[in-house]
Image 1 (cartoon, rainbow, N blue to C red):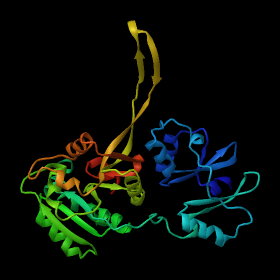
Image 2: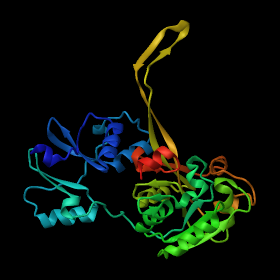
Image 3: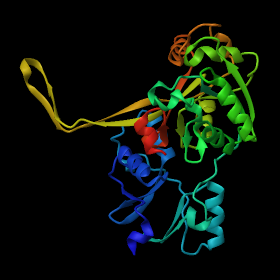
Length: 349
């Protein structure tokens, strides 16, 4: 009965931020109940973990150290309608009903209350989106010998349609698509689909790198905009990334995914004269990986050298070296789907 009530959504207060992020990935959820000796202690959300990472807290930090004091929960005296309205207003994946002794006596889950799995974004916004769709897709050969990477199917839709759909859910319906390889096929297919978006295309005459072609839009885009590679999907509320970008007055925000690597051996650290300092059995290392999604301010387009090969990393270094603000917004490993490699493509199809 307890297992049915909690649905594996419980984590101990002494677990780490990394433990919580991993559990969220396994469950495909963004909110967990935190307990201390089977008593309700609080709630930990993906947003709480992201804010802690942005504040440079180590991933080994205990959950109890970052718990919010002000959280929304139900009380036994609350009506179902009251709890339902609270969940809807604050986009709560779950709402525990907690008595005066901190016992959880019931839990309302979003999918049960609203009969739908996905929670809508926190805020709507209508900003332009650039989709970088000009690459040759060499990592997906021989499939990309026939189909350009943006048109490779995932389920019943192409990759690029999934990207459109996710941005559209947030209110974005204007897409500028950088094309080169098999450009005519991409344009023909998207036109034939009669999609409810405003689509425009700009084509490199020669390979210009992941940022070089952006200079072609300097007279077109006049507001904050998103850039997305055409082979990645980010499962995150984009309005939260935008809030971070705006509140920190960033010139560029990079969306970074946590990536975990396990070393299948014991590692040894030594000091002077080979003295053993530390021995760790099969450690796991976590890196922040550039996911391929960014938010940029429009003035940057005028800073790009015209008709020059320029990677996005060159652009980021240039802005940083000129004193601009470059921020990094973290997402969990499973929130980032890199469809550009065979192994990842097969996992997601």
